[in-house]
Image (cartoon, rainbow, N blue to C red):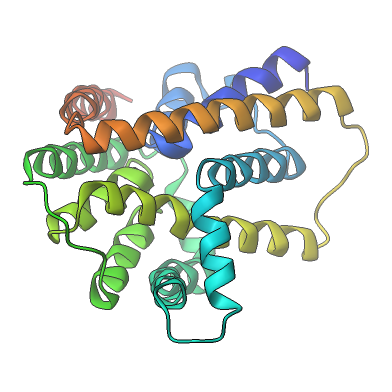
Amino acid sequence: MEVIDAIILGIIQGLTEFLPVSSSGHLELGKAILGDNSVPQESLLFTVVLHFATALSTMVVFRKDILEILKGIFQFTWNEELKFSLKIIISMVPAALIGFFFEEQLGMLFNGNVLLVGFMLIVTALLLYLADKAKHTGKPVSYSNAFVIGISQAIAMLPGISRSGATISTSVLLGNDKSKAARFSFLMVVPLIFGKIAKDILSGDLSYEGHNTQALAMGFLAAFISGILACTWMIKLVKNSKLVYFAMYCFIVGLIAITLGYFY
């Protein structure tokens, strides 16, 4: 892999991990427009490197929150930090179960199914629009909310459904404070990313042979920096109720995808 390709892929990964536009949906559209052979499939090692970069970018943005959570956990008392950690664990359950039991079935959906991508982008647009119009509240995420948000995260495994868009919108529509919704959405994915990385490493499928070390490093750096920028920007957008622009974008791209689906 060339360095420039690695940088471009890193930027795309960093941005789409946090912005509500569905990276998986855009990849499927790219494959449909350019042809399957025109969009190179990055290696498992490169994918792991990029996911690690975006997980670290989340930890940098929320470093104070994470430190407070860790301090609270090691106090071994029933405090707010421990309660928040339990909510994160609860939110992980649906996606972890779906990923474990239906990984092969999910993989089959990522095979140029442009119509599905189009309809799911429309769903994402609707969720973002409704969340954008929701009133500001001071309500924190409850245990039941955490599980429902986790279901949204599991549904977002479908190509065309934005993970951040689905989880933040669901949280806001449940009546939660917009800033708290964004914070919970980004923190809840960190354990899942590290879990997926651990699974890939333990699988023994990672190969270091033939890789351009410089390309890996530059891809990591690009994903890390763009991830920090996108995460910070997204928090401000949610707080200021400006998700409608992403809703319009997803709706337009969704219509284009549906149109392509009928002729592809």
